[in-house]
Image 1: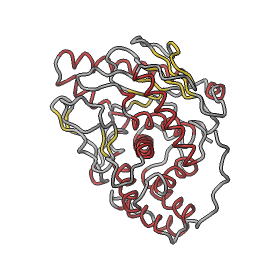
Image 2: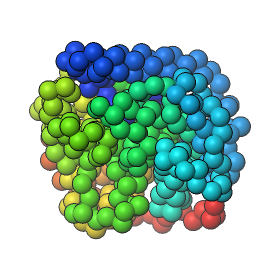
Image 3: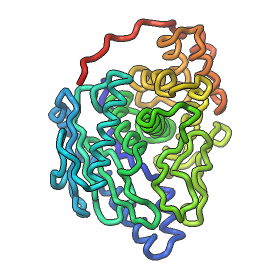
Length: 369
């Protein structure tokens, strides 16, 4: 296990909020500026917490343990405790969605990959809902989840999207494993792994095959007046939304369209469309349930093979190696992985293919939580 980047990771990219601020009416502008300011303040708080990594160890329990707090529309964490592990539903949709969503994410990681919570040691899953007024974001702040209610003019409540919960909690997995720095290609990989596993948490909960899944991140977050299906599309990056208030989805789905920018930490929410589509293409080629073969490869890469500075090419090579280790070098899985990355303009290097290891037995199963 590696302790890596402690960046605060928001589900809504800054380019959406900046477009709202520039093109919306006074209410839209105020909501966008407030969300941008609040997100920036929370990032500052996370930097200060970065000097206290031992805190995560204190919060590890060894089993599933969820606690949901309410900020009561103030900007404070964790807030007042509303529901704990084993408590009956509160009747507050945001509270109960945060509780259920974190539990489904825990179950997904444990039942499929034998991972005990975010840190693999049973880290408590703590959430704060009703954070601020009209806060249009959700985030993992390095130790807990924070959810806004949205403004009901662009965004609804963020707890309603299970893939958003899975996405943000996966940032905690990345923090504890590969530690991908939150900038440029490593940062785009950081975002992409969260999109991948956020979508897989939703697909697993809904028992969807690759053909049944929508491959949309944040489906249902926008109110019906907004022209968009979600905040990102893994199947077709760049097509998730096209609305006068939000602008057009800027994600590329191929290296030839890679966006070079200093904004958004080097375009971490933009260029993540490229590895997102690589996973989608791989999963579709393999068929069935995406969390079983493609998901196992990506999980192995995230937890065993990447470094904080890893880029797209290194990730593609690592995926090919993991596919051989997990399923056999001559199996269809590494072939699908290579084809998935090739579809986005990244060819697995001949050296990686030549030295790719073959099947090794899986690790013993962990205890039931």
